[in-house]
Amino acid sequence: MRQGYLQRSGEAIVRVRVAGERAFLTIKGKTCGISRSEFEYEIPAADAEELLRIADGPLIDKTRHYAPVDGHTFEIDEFHGDNQGLVVAELELESEEQTFPRPAWLGEDVSSDPRYRNAWLSLQPYQSWPEVASAGLPSGPDTP
Image 1 (cartoon, rainbow, N blue to C red):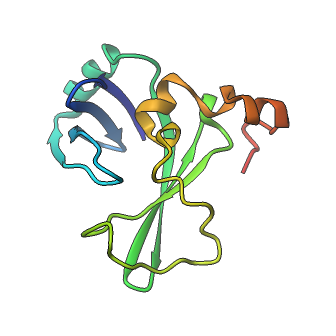
Image 2: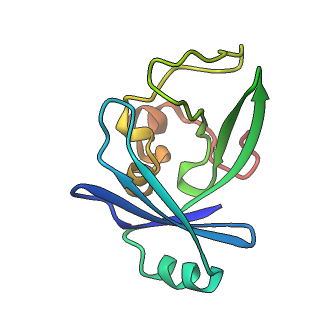
């Protein structure tokens, strides 16, 4: 997946994403707690490529994996480029109070930390975080 941001301030974030042969334009409302409204529309891939060229800031490059667990599907994003070394699992819920399985491989809950949002990562990549840079974590193509 490649994605870029057309707007990331004010009341909405506007993102364009290319995932394989398909492309999407997504509008996300303001975050309230860990929830926010989201509207996603499929658009022609050629339009998405043009929009990525005018995106604000660097693009996000990642591979998405899916992990079904007890009737839920975790989306696991493995980041590349300047975000190499970061892997984030996400689960869409009906409400913030909804319970869900917590498999042993699931790490710390970072839902409330804005640094892990893709819009933030495009401007402040994981490899530039002081705690990551000082830890000397590998950043090459062989990093799991």
